[in-house]
Amino acid sequence: VLPRDIFAPRQNSAGVAFGERKALASFLAERDAAGPLDVTARCFWSGAKADAPQVIRSAVDGTAIGSVHALGAEAASALVGEAARHVRTAEAVPAATRAGWLRKAADLMEAREGLLMNLLAREAGKTVDDGIAEIREAVDFLRFYAAEAERLFAAPTFLPGPTGEENVLQYRSRGVAVCISPWNFPLAIFTGQVAAALAAGNVVIAKPAEQTPLIAAIAVGLLHEAGFPATSLYLAPGDGKAGAALVAHKATAAVAFTGSTETAFAINRALAARDAPIAPLIAETGGINAMIVDATALPEQVADDVVMSAFRSTGQRCSALRLLFVQEEVADAMVEMIAGAAAELTVGDPRDIATDMGPVIDAAQHTMLSEHLDRMGREQRIRFAGTLPEGLPAAGQWFAPHIVELDRAEALPGEVFGPILHVVRWKAGGLEAVCDAIERTGFGLTLGIHSRIDDVARLVRERLTVGNVYINRNMIGAIVGSQPFGGSGLSGTGPKAGGPNYVARFTREQVVSVNT
Ligand code: NAD
Image: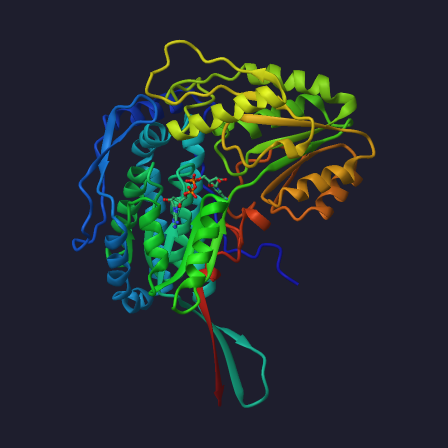
């Protein structure tokens, strides 16, 4: 029997009290004082032969906010060789010291909230709400994995055995851990992967997404400032080719990846093709996340939760709602109410406190969304098209919220990463068919259920093997330590980030049996 709280005592980050006008005003002033920005992202290893620096421009207005010295494939490969030289030194650092450094980094991150908020808005288009939530999550990961380092490494576990023999299980680091992250949570996911790999005593190479290297550079700088030596944590800015070179290197002993399912497949294949020791892969990927709403659900609550789940962060969350199944009897009224709530959303400069949705990350995403919408307009029925206010900076990739009604779930071709919600009707007695349709997507990340009938929620959640199920609430914003996050099937491998099994995946278990 597990104790009720299996984790060491912890406290999640408090964030900012929005209700207090004064606190908010001084918070925003501090944020704005942190600009204009000129951040450099480079590998801190002097031996790294980086490409010529490239300017990074704001996702909001196109102004220069820093530069990146990206690594090509060859330089990334050389970096793994360099990192491998320091594996023993990193492992020799006691877990309590590593935990102390992680906690110090959390404090530093909270202290630099203004700079981070500024950068999250300008490099990644994050709204004030989203920025605050993202910093909180990164801080929570640092503190949570610090406690996990202590829990796993503090003392060996004694196992039962015959008299005269002592059996001990202990955790050891793996060696070089490569962490590859996406642009949509450039601070929280980046920091979470890195913090867990460091907690386990590895030498870590952190490759941020090519769209967001600057926030990553600040995070790595804070971890170094907190105590982690430069030889235990390397920033590896670069594109997918650099990522592929890091994975392919023989000395890479573990890979944590968050991003698209396609890239996870590529990494899995690359690891399998290596003539090297078998390395574990943690893959956290996408989803065609569904919510099922039946006729007993509370309409106002559904509208609020759907709008939040589908459109917050401009729909650029892996957990976001993509496919809404509404029972026929209430479908028209429900869609109308959701459209009414979506029409209230303000698209605009994410630094403005009144903005609900910032830009999408880049022109490629905008093109993908526009093409998808064109196709839906030809083949299906657009139920709601939001409008963009006038005067938005031309350089931002603005995209209004949309709702599309599909004649069947299969009309959705795949994960559409942005603010487009798809709705499908279902008839009473058709719950099994809805579950079949969700299962056929092959994904299993998040699932929402809105119903006042307990048996409906029970049937659905027992039937589907989705990683995170949300009942009568929105389905985003998993909290570290309370809602460990991650899916199965095409959505990933687990173990869940922010959960009790995550750090252990970055370790090797060793059992020592002594004849006493
Ligand atoms: P992506 O797969 O294009 O890129 C992610 C990272 O992988 C980037 O750092 C990229 O440079 C790197 N990369 C690309 N090709 C590579 C290769 N061959 N080898 C090694 N690394 C390579 O994903 P994206 O567009 O940046 O992110 C969006 C996707 O991420 C969506 O599908 C979303 O659902 C998913 N996501 C999942 C989670 C989760 O926790 N499950 C969280 C956030 C985002």
